[in-house]
Amino acid sequence: MNQTVSSEDNPFLAMQARLDLAAEKLGLEPNIVAILRTCEREIRISMPVVMDDGSVQVFEGYRVQHSTSRGPAKGGLRFAPNVNRDEVRALAAWMTWKCAVVNVPFGGGKGGVICDPFKMSKGELERVTRRYVAGIMDLLGPDRDVPAPDMGTDGQVMAWFMDTYSMHARSYLPAIVTGKPISLGGSLGRIEATGRGVMLCTREALRHLGMKASSCTAAVQGAGNVGLISAMQLASIGVKVIAISDVHGGLINEKGLDLAAIAAHLQRHRRLDGYEGGTRISNAEILELPVDILVPAATENVITSQNAPNIKARILTEGANGPCTANADRILDEKGVFVIPDILANAGGVTVSYFEWVQDRMAFFWTQKEVEERMEHIMVDSFAAVVDMAKRFGVSNRIAAYMLGVNRVAETTRMRGIYA
Image (cartoon, rainbow, N blue to C red; front, side):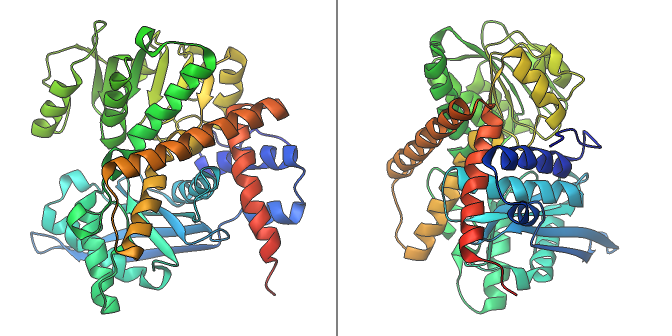
């Protein structure tokens, strides 16, 4: 099957191209592949919201459920000005494969609202969130679709989300979302989970390749929850993080960055501008630095056929969803870059989201140590399963991860049958 997509920037077409290749390697039936290539449900809503100045602005929102074959749809809610339907479709499908790779009983979903949360007041964000929940109520439920935070959303947004749903349902239902504040049924360890998962996968890759963490340097694109925590987690095992960036650009310090000072600066200013502990560098340059470990942890499509030839890292750990295009995969493979794909590398977040959902439904909560130990066990086993699949079939880690996840979803789809 042809892996080339008609538009390198279309993440949903890239997902389908990788799915097709994995399905071909697995020898899946065409009927099953046809089901997995499409999304089960999609909804688009228009949301009139009264702004602080009294004007009414109509926002556009989406919720997509790619698959519920293995369990309720699971996936984040993204607030960003560039949200579009194909992006949400791709993110929903990636969640399907991601949940299957780490073998948690969820399907894949994703939501998005076209807005700029950084230009909105807290009151406006709350009204947009509550209007969005009201607009998609029929799709939601602890056994139907369980959202979580993503780009532009956080624990506060999830608190509003949970409250709105609970008010409509006339019942306290904390399991309707994950990533909530601890006081509302959130899980200890959830904030650190994605970045910790990035570190655990990178640590396993270093062991697999016979490299010592204390001898390695790293660059991280992204200084949000995933990027900054990934950097701090890598530093905790001895890796020297020399570069980090946010949407406005980055910093480099060959002697190693003071990540605690950067975290404090970001807490005060919400951007890296003004921090004096490094030299300024662009987001494009940070990807091409001569480091051992590269962590793209910002957004999708940052490594393409145009800049993939310039990647110098030995290990590329995808903290973001879809940072490498399908066309870049071949180039990275030929260069011998050890890619830890997003559906494995950043699955620590959904793994602990699953733990939060379980704890909410039991009304019994675990310690942070218990959460971290259980998550580490799952991530380490999943890494080993992907590397084993890659070795057995002679494919890249990405296609191996797709094969592992797709095969599990195909199995449940096949067993459940076609309802007609």
